[in-house]
Length: 283
Image 1 (cartoon, rainbow, N blue to C red):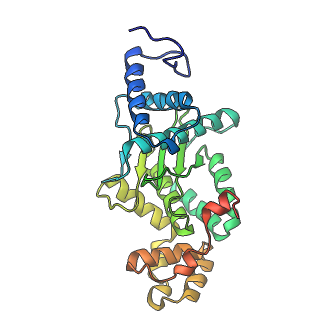
Image 2 (tube, one colour):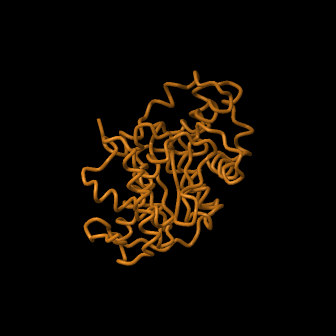
């Protein structure tokens, strides 16, 4: 079979293993055939090329390490991951991003302080860039039950993608810290994407490790043991405890709701701020 240039896009470096590239091309074409029209780009040829390149980059690996029982269709996840990868690669070309030299638990303790003021959400991306990490906010596709993902691109820079599925402050910060915990703990694994759906409980060791580090980074265990709001369920105690730790009160309220499985408490507080509106400046 003869493939014309217009029919078979070349790799970004104008070379590829022909057989592997063609297999990735066919798989990408099959994926896109199952994607709803509203989830497709206006430029379908470009989307086919980008998805082919994404699938080729993971040839010989799992396409992603999914949190157990991830329910979203693989096609939608593949398209979403491709958008994030493409945006991240464009960004690294346009900006002078330093190489990634590592991230540690102390860094996580530092970045969570940005949660204390919602206006500081705009500072999260630049803070991460200083450490060679690219943050992409890319809303998820309809029917795609994914909260976040993390992976490395060819330059070795980690990329964190957040879908903003639930635009609450507590959910945003737990998702971000969970993905960054993977960077701290599992950096060597990230050339294969890790994709997370927090509505599913995972038994995977890497997920339990990331959950623990994220939770402890948001609120240290020693502090949590003495949190008055655990016993009073008082919003004022939540606010005062958060102020003491210099973090958002929604983080404290959200943890109480999860641990107690009491999603009827602090509803007004946790829904007070819509992260999507803050990040995308929507009224």
